[in-house]
Image 1 (cartoon, rainbow, N blue to C red):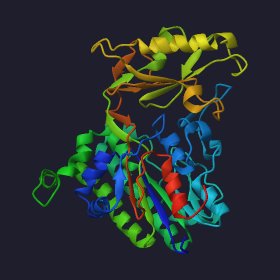
Image 2 (cartoon, helix red, strand yellow):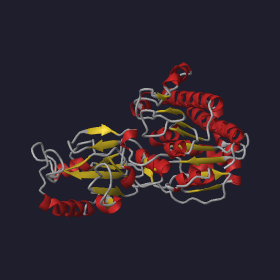
Image 3 (spheres, helix red, strand yellow):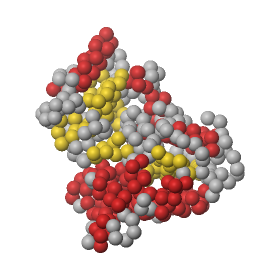
Image 4 (cartoon, rainbow, N blue to C red):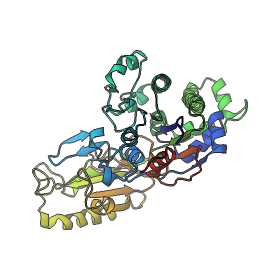
Length: 432
């Protein structure tokens, strides 16, 4: 590795390959990168959601080995909490690089909070809303520059005042870039990683066609430009966010010189207008009650559900006997497979995995016993308890497994999310 070799990994949450290509038609830096780089669909983890996907990207292993399956963790005491960086049982890139004497700048990589001892700097990630900076001596500077981790209560704010929340998102990413460029300019580094939240926030709460309106924008007489002239501030703010990212990428290319630039996402986004209320179904079937709950779905809202049994000898107050474990798993699996939408007659469940088959018998951190994926039109909400098992989704879009990647400065085609880790290691001339 040359002494001045640098690698920048720019994470863009929720970016699909289709949207990446659409943005390349409008934005100059992305357009040039798409012509000169290797890019494509980046297949995410199971589940294909933020916390396990980014963790797999920076560790190079699947969730069973790093132990993070969702933003939420249900422990054996049946306590539910948000995961943190210390839950990761594998070595992230920055720890590997530090052992080799290389320095890193890490900003907003979920779920790594609080900031840990890296060389040179780290800022902890969302969904935590308390600033965490390492080394502590940098915290005053980061605060002075107005760093914003994320926008709070975005779903509620979108319903009340869409323009206001778009302005908040734009401000948050401006501040993230301002702080990032300060750190990149003032500290030594060989590797840097910065994750941007705004595409995920936009795509969850606005129609995908609204965000993708940029794809029709060529020249000065396009639909987008006409809409902008008519005062469509929503589209202008969306465009401002992507232009902000594009201009930052241009400066990143200058910083790395002959180095490696990677753009990658944790998952894509697609329209999912219906929701499967899994815990409503589990309650209806008698698996959840106040006295003897036998099974519970504990995941965040996404197109997959994670189910844990309340097993004797494993959970503190377990009620499912060991001899009944297999029978109960088969019973729940069979019940899920038979579910159909009353309106359409379609099957709701697309696929079901046993946790030990998906993640291995030695999986870390109490993996789910069952993982299921719903069909294309559905997502899963464990937290809504209603009489019906299928309802209208509270947000129009949710995750799809195919994200996006772009690699500039290195001739290798990458097909799965775990390999991004290996590309960085190989480019820097290190042993895995």
